[in-house]
Length: 151
Image (cartoon, rainbow, N blue to C red; front, side, top):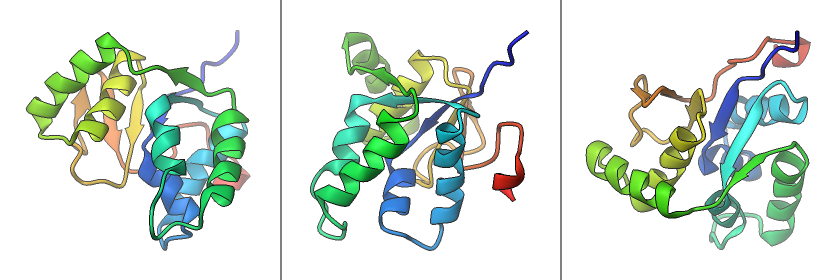
């Protein structure tokens, strides 16, 4: 019987941390590499690609961003989700309930609507330590069967 992979939504700040090689990027990279190994099923809103690849004065530029997107989103069997009416309605509700900015609410709503078991972000504006409609909100953590790569 095949083992199901944990369904994980990785917020844009995990990708940006890796892109900018921030001090905390090894934690984020561990999650992205788990997706690359197919240890987790990554779920992503189309908005995610815009946030990662869009303009940011402190980012390395579109080339490195495109490489990151290709490797860790396009190349890992990501379950892409469009921002549709249902996601928008859920995002509006979550924005009010958890005092989230619009983009953050869209990310969390996408995770909830698609049945993600985990929503991972460094952003402390999210309700860390809580479950939102069955989706556990936390920082990046190992939620898959650990391998030697996770040491």
